[in-house]
Image (cartoon, rainbow over all chains, first blue to last red; front, side):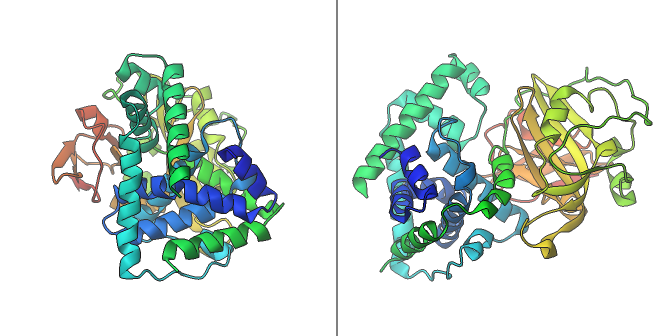
Amino acid sequence: MDDDELLAAAKRGNGEAFATFYRRHRDLVLAYLRRRVRDPELAFDLAAETFAAALISLRRYEPGRGPAAAWLLGIAHNKLLESLRRGRVEAAARRRLRHEPIALADEDLLAVDERAAAGTAALERLPDDQREAIRLRVIDEREYADIAAELRTSPQVVRQRVSRGLRTLRTRMGERS
Amino acid sequence: VSAFDTLENQLRDSARRRPGRRRAARLVPLVALAAVAVFLLARGPNASDEREAVAPASTWAPTLDTSLTRSPVPAEQLATYGVLRRPQNAGDRSPAVERMISRIEDSMALGVRVDSVRRLYHQNGRNVVLVSVEVLRMDPRDPRDDVRDGLCLMTGSDNGSSGATCGSFADARSGRMRYPMPPRGLAPDGTKRVTIRVKGGRTISITPRDNYYDASWIGEGGAVGIARPRFIR
């Protein structure tokens, strides 16, 4: 199943579909967050809040407007900004879902870094043009028009590279999990 | 069982419990709005922004997804940000700005002070807009988290995409309300330079204009702010 199918199934209450979506994108989200926060516990906390918020937001997810991974990373980015603004990681989405806090053991902290590294490595293995497009669009959050100007191509081509790259990442990470 | 397994189990169980919940839509507008929060403003300040004032008694009434109000901007905001004291001009009320503020939904803010809307920056189809609101909803489900008299700094493009970072006056005044990548935000009146520590250990210095600073003006579009800015008077 592709991401859109998984999310559509999750909207209908298919828990396994959302669990698959989580496993598929967990490393990418951690790679994104771990680059921006100092400690692995904070990265895990933000990732947990990101997936909880994504689950709550499912009804508003619109298939076809862009890769689901970009939507998810947009939520991760929002959670990151929110935590910077408030000086703490919010647990609003997790509270709403009635999730119990998760205590991290030492091996979990190591696993956060391993998974973040795996996400980064998967990104590194992409073809240069796709990796660069994803970095600029998804990680650095630049506008398509900006990226196109910098890479001397069209916004459409950039969109294609981002989309293909994320699809490849999704497949590879899906194979790993 | 690892923490990752526990999280997966929690998400799986929650997804099973939540089919068709209408309440879910409440959180998303804020997420969707902020999810596109960071844009790169690649050029320097614009000297050719529209400056002609429009009549204060004008009945500009943009269509919003939340309530608008003509209540006055709080005195402390007026005293701190000169842009709020100048008359509103045509750029402040341009269609692009109207599209941007139309993205503010009631899950995010109540009582958008329509006369406070100011375009701080406009270049190459990019806009940065300051808006004062009566109530900022930090958590749409919990009114106890509401903030009175908030400010939102919105960024967006003429084609309609937009994002926002919002906070209390104290958040804005202290520099906490900002975009970290590249560093951008509000600077109070009298600020000659804004200095910010960025990832890698360097400190960069930006001259603000119209109460706004943006690291991309000095070729630091790729910088990531790792500390609050300092406003040098």
